[in-house]
Image 1: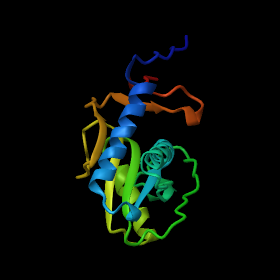
Image 2: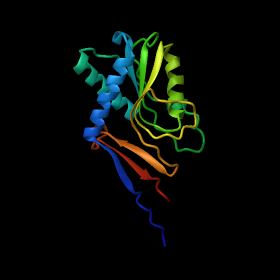
Image 3: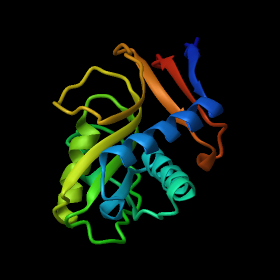
Image 4: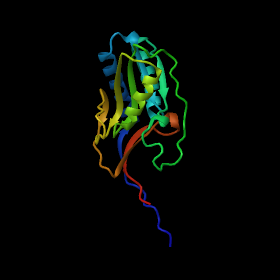
Length: 187
């Protein structure tokens, strides 16, 4: 008799309206702390962070008239766990269409957990040049860091346990905008 998978319990942390509001707050914080704006650039970590960075770019252009340079990173090959028994990762393009040297870069990700993704992203950014500053904006900080990485701009702090996962669903991926926390699936 085959064991059936238990469907994980799920709690909605943010709905579409709340996500939009928090993106506005991330934009406000980034603009307030990075002057002059002409030296500011946004770089999103694929996939969710890239979509959030695009939304931030649009929101900032609407508010200020300034279209900030926008880039996307795929940090897959920079991860420290890429060859540790995980399935073969899907590699997407990295695109930094501007000179990163002397820029004030706001690195954008959807969820911050251990800090390993951010470490990999910073390592990759330095392969493109030497930014003046790198600030970190995250939609959700779930705590429990393994590395000394802290966000500069946070939409929501929600500490989770080891047995939980925070998942961001975005309309750009064909989903309804929402953020959920759920128990990890058991085999």
